[in-house]
Length: 349
Image (cartoon, rainbow, N blue to C red; front, side, top):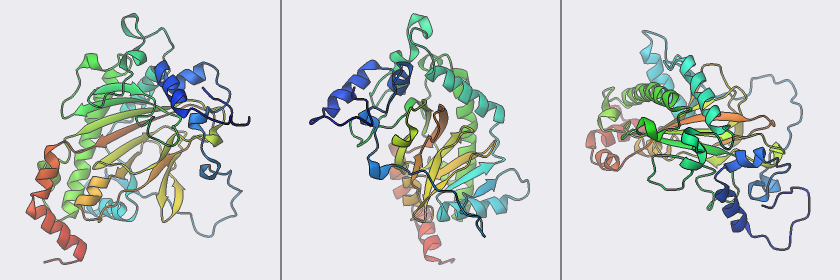
């Protein structure tokens, strides 16, 4: 694989051959790092214009810089405040952090630790004498549990410095044997907690639309669930690569679990804003479909992930996404559609 960010580029470059060589290892970016890679391989190399320059020291600001909204869901008797805060943050930012969310900190810590154990497992380890990651490595869309390096490896312009354990947890949960032994119990526990949080968020959004709290759940907006367990291996030249390219999510809601190092950014009013990790907090991102069904009263935001240090990083992403029957139920639901129109036009009749 071509690997030099400083040497002159060859006259012709077979990118597809490099991608296939990476894919054939079934060990992802972690395998490159374990093999002692000293420079960012060309398939991961960001074009110069896409790199983030080292920012100059900031002058003291008379006003604080823009910060991502934080919503506290734990304040008993103050549900009305949450009903206002969640849609306001969704409309203005499409993105907010939640505290007091009911997901135990022990569960978030244990799932990060267990996923790290899976990703950092050495060659030759694993279950039944077989390497768990190689066993799960797949690009088959229908496979419920799989491990891979970049789901869009052959389509993206630049590969991301990231490996992922993909787990489709609902509506048809995997069996325990489908999940790697190093993290199966932790994944099941975390998935249950974060599904409960997702239901709470859908209740608040339903009420903000003037509907019953269970409305969006009743039309099954909350049925699909995917856990994406990302691993960002140590990068020899972090300024030349990116962990996750800028994008918006296609589903309803995304709940992100950051480690303490951070690196997540959101595009807000044309500027990339750092999402500083808050101990115990989870990050909520509005998806494209939720923006669509609320007629832009909630907006999907663009996010990216940069790892500015050479340290490894971990992140858990919970996605609530549509499964086939949902779109029909939404578009056939006249009460929901009429309420959205009234809300967005300012007609309060």
